[in-house]
Image 1: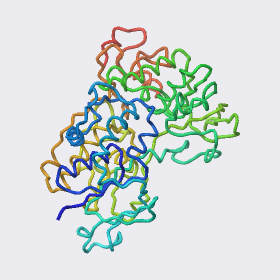
Image 2: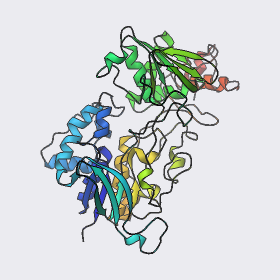
Image 3: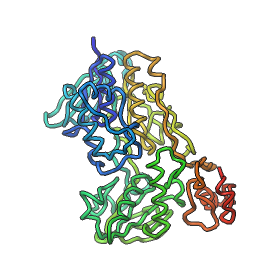
Image 4: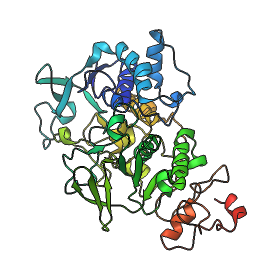
Amino acid sequence: MTRTVAILGAGPVGLAAAAHVLERGMQPLILDQGDAVGHSVRAWGHVPMFSNWRFNIDAAAALRLEQAGWQAPDPEAYPTGSDLVDCYLEPLGRTLAPWLRLDRRVVAVSREGIDKVKDAGRATAPFMIETEGAAGEERHRADAVIDATGTWIQPNPGGAGRPVPGEVGHSRISYGMPDVSGRERERYAGKRVAVLGGGHSAIGTLIALSGQPGTTPLWLCRASTTARALGGGAADQLVARGALGTDMARLVDSGSIRLENGFHLAAVEGSTPLTAVSADGRRIKVDELVIATGFRPDLSFLRELRVALDPALECPPALAPLIDPNLHSCGTVRPHGAAELAHPEPDFYIAGMKSYGRAPTFLLATGHEQVRSIVAAIAGDHEAAARMELVLPETGVCSGPGLRAAKAVTPACCGGPALTRADACCAADEVAKDSGASGCGCGTSAEPAKAAACC
């Protein structure tokens, strides 16, 4: 009998999973709360991707598209989210139309007739996926489940894991990466806009704001130094990602973006303008506040499944040490698959951005490799599931205890130039001195020759 694999989410990872399921002779059931494929991607359609098309198209999906007469985009070009939808996800969705069930929000996944506690017969009982949507309440059976619902709809709040007083429901606060120079330009143009966060979403939004005449962008960076936020620069093998940090450093250095380091949001007061209050007492008056502090997975509908999660990152425990931002320094996240993503619930997997939990380092190519391996495991091809077929580009980012500097390919090594200290030769040296050390050991601002050869 043909196995049915329920795929939750019709984004790039979910659709790739469906292509692999069909390639293996199984039946996909694709469920998504949106009314079209790529529902979440459309929300960040204005955002350029760090990786070029070569890293953003799944092999099984490409084969399916080519059989339908699709012409692949230039593999070296860099798509936006909208390009990803228009040139890839929509054509792929058309080839998968018979298996797509849109406008269906998943509210619960369980084993049919068996609660979370019961052992007997668990591994052979079908999954029951409950949905709500335009068709009303529905129940769908499947032999395996891949949760690729992502994290976009679950942005982190502005506090340390919790909303701060005055934050919830504030009309002048937005989350993630709003389209400040496109659809939402009128809201932000000519305003004083603060962006809280230190990741790529925050940096990208600040760069976009800096290009708006009359707009004053302020960077509320929670870290005491910007070295980690600005990334690996020239050491990053994804050139567009490295360039983002380089551009940001230039804008901060020139004063185009005002920087407030060590800013931990403690409260929001007032409305227009609002006052962002830091834990150390600083008060910043702005017209708009963008909170770009990352995302977290929605685990509520998985409560009746036996799901194992790392207590900090909310990702599969075996994956946690590979992606933990507290531990990682200069290097790649090793490709991984079914073995690292397995849960105590047989034939249940979380893939894509959601598999990373609260960790921020996900690349789309990683998700494609995940679902290739997962589907092979569901099909019983354990040799293919264990084989890794992806080499990820290095980030060149230095972080974690005992900071080690990135091995750079140009004199702009160690995370690039120092931004706030005249006595630091590079970003890594700045971090070390800010933390009380004598430096990173690669030179001083008075010894540029040593700095050029560092790390």
